[in-house]
Image (cartoon, rainbow, N blue to C red; front, side, top):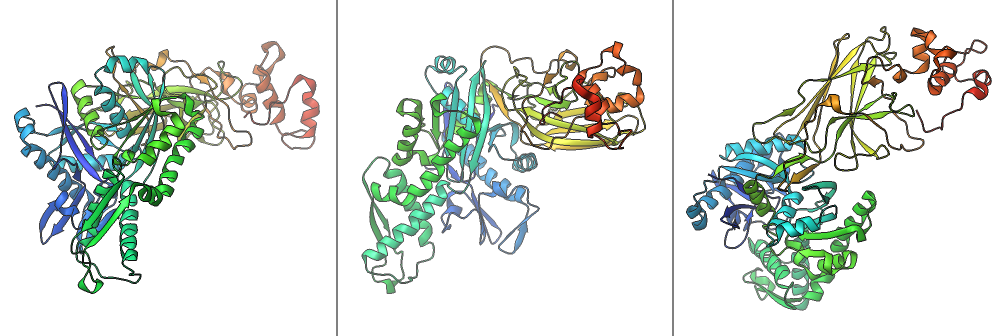
Amino acid sequence: MGIVGFDFGTTNSVMSIISGDRCIPILDEGFPHPSVVSYRAGEVVAGREAKKQLASATTGVIGNTVKSPKTMLGQSSVMIDGTRYSPKVVVRDVVSHVMAHARGDRIAKRSGEDFSRAVVTIPVDMNGARRRELREACRMAGLSIYQFVHEPLAALYGYLRGLPDFVTEFNRLNRELVLVFDWGGGTLDLTLCRVTDGMLVQVVNDGCSDVGGDVIDDMLVNEIERRALARRGITGEVRRQVGAVARLREEAERAKIALSSKDVYSVLVLDYFHSEAGDVDLEYRISREELQAIVSAKVTQGISRIEAMLREARVEPSSVELCLATGGMVNMPLIQERLHEIFGARRVKISERGNTIISEGAAWIAQDRARLMLAKNIEVVVARSAHSMAGQGHFPVIRAGALMPREGEVQSLPEPLTLYCCDPTDGVAKFQLTAPRRTGRNVQVTDERSLLGLLAVEVDSRQRPLLERLLLDVAIDENLVLSATASSTIAGKSDSMEFHNLEFGLHVGSAPPPDGDKKLDDQKPAASGAREVGAIQVRSNIATHARDLRSVPGEILYRWNPHYFEFRNAPPQEQDFEKVMYQPCSACQKVYCECARRRAGAAVSFPPAHEP
């Protein structure tokens, strides 16, 4: 049996299969399955039937119904109609419903798929703990997750793979920036990608849930009802029939879709009001102009996130070669007009399969066995060395391009990385794990880095510099969680941390994947990039070589090896400066005093204030 694609979405969920050279989404009456489940007197009802009783787009528990259970992963339990449920159980029930419908589909039966294994898409902001719970919930439903992949990467791959000239278009986009703009029912997700050397790699991500399509549907429901009552001269409160608002929500969704291609849509909901309102039906003709006026503020709020993200990435809109717009919201003419204003009509592609493109991309990824890879180096900050006397350096622990594990796999170092404590004075070795903001393996010495986290390991403060060995072990599991453990060999202490927000690329070329597991002994440390002037810095006190005396602060080294600073040995200027400036003054007993400045004289130049 093959591996299918599964987009388990906040609002809707879809499974897709590959049949021959076509990708086929398994739909419910032409639409994705609502991610909704209801518990009625011991009976589990999921999907479209459960959604029919929802009166609002509120995410979470509404009476005995749960909308968007994916957002509850990570909580210990949820209360549903007086009974406590595990979020994993609720997710399981939605996944089971989608799987059962897919297995019963006529086309799926002919294909022979049993829908037991899938490439599953996840939002870029889903942390590792929630990914673990999603995997467990899917296992409970009988679905094995072969590989996680971020939704924007799946959407982009699905779009490119569906083109008749896939290879030509992919080659045309080489080295270019692509923005994936996914505006669905639950969230607005943005990912800036770069196509480089056979890979789609993430550069920067952004997203929010306060402008999702469901929120806009609620605005439409409220405004349509208000305007319909106003035309009848009713300004006070009225009573509605049970389930009437849910039916109006369905009509509002239809209106939003219809007004993308027509000027006017007639909203009609029979038996909406109680009889005291007069006519019990709700009827209102809404125009495209009215719709745009109602949602204009939310559209502006969503579009502004593009501009903010590009500013953060220091990218001009003109540098983006392709803007791929997906999701149900992007069919609105107003949103398309705004995207055209930013990028121009030529560079904006509106996916005609916005509701299914993510699951289709996941299915193609499964079919093509496209490998998920690390987009950016994972580095450890090391003290200055012969390679970098100006400041700290960054030693790559895992290179960009390393293959990410799939189901049941763990990617780890062949053996822990050995480092040395060059300044044990305060009794703590500081491991700073960073990632460059630039994607790919060819990171420049001046590139900026982002701090992933800090490990602090106790060391023996009585030992001389560069004696105590430090071990750093890292591994990435099937849930794409990076675990790091640092330990000291003499003090026998350790510290551990998990990192959940890694960024990935997707290898899609015909050439073999880049060598992502090159031996660490062959890798050379790179000097650090610029740092913010005036910011407090944690100065690294770990080094890559036991004999690298240049990594030891001058005043510490002087206590252990004063002969190092004899004139004939030509000690480095910065260490000589530290030896002079950070030793207590024999005259005033102060450190970094005016006496020391006079003693240092012209032989020592003071480093800029922002250098460590």
